[in-house]
Length: 339
Image 1 (cartoon, rainbow, N blue to C red):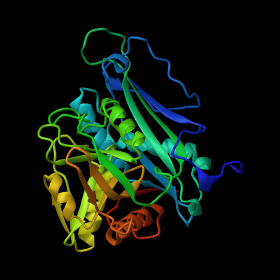
Image 2 (image 1 turned 30 degrees about the horizontal axis):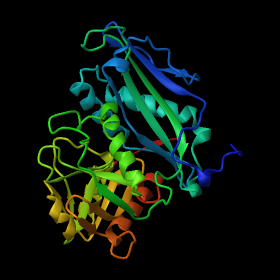
Image 3 (image 1 turned 180 degrees about the horizontal axis):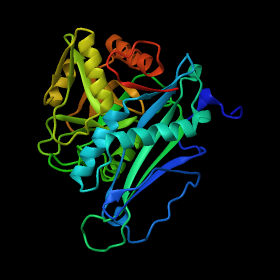
Image 4 (image 1 turned 120 degrees about the vertical axis):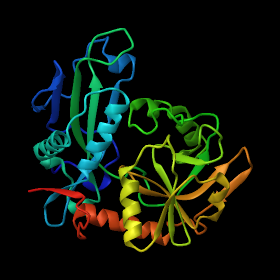
């Protein structure tokens, strides 16, 4: 792959050699198939196109200094996909089948896994869609599970650096008892206008308050929020937030470092008390927050006073990435190694 500039990859799609597919028909899943075709042959009446019966996941594979390939927490992604399937009435894939599919597609595209020193990784995108042709609003009878991969660079152009966020009140990403806890495309469609508003105003991302009362911190665009103060890692507890595997991992690492971890509602005013804060997810790991502006209340919560990532966020970011790349011991059994 001498023609790829590994160190300057964007977070975007690049064609790779293979994807993995599996079909659900007659009440059961079939065998995994390797495929080199990039497109899907879909009926125009498929439920995924009309009623949003689709789910996806995102995880990464890394090439270590030792040359080994490490996939980060695929079992956790399998569990989250199972939760989504349960939420929107799709057949679940077993954890064993999901992990096997991930391993198969990563191994088949091994030449696209960026080298260790590049700082890039292989992004893995599982997708599950309802494919039955029907016009009534009810679950599909047939499904297609696909996983494709693409090498990616940092999610934000500046990499691990602070970013400004803006509170958008005009739109909600999801409702308290809606689909926010599931990884479905509809949640992201619901965020597009707010995200464009934020970008048009010069911010890296939008920031949501809870949909019910507009009082509590919800999510940072498509990522979970966390704040640091008094040696405590604080993250929202809410019925409309996607359970982030990265956030779960950071909570564990914070505990390992001797910090307290709190999951609870966070009122907006509490933003002024945090020593550090960040948005976290698979794509960026941690995007440290410089400030959060609230135009309606004429407030600006400046979190990174010197404009730089805080020491604890930096420590957590480096620790997690060191585990992902195999530079530090994987004491929690998060990494699946492909020989």
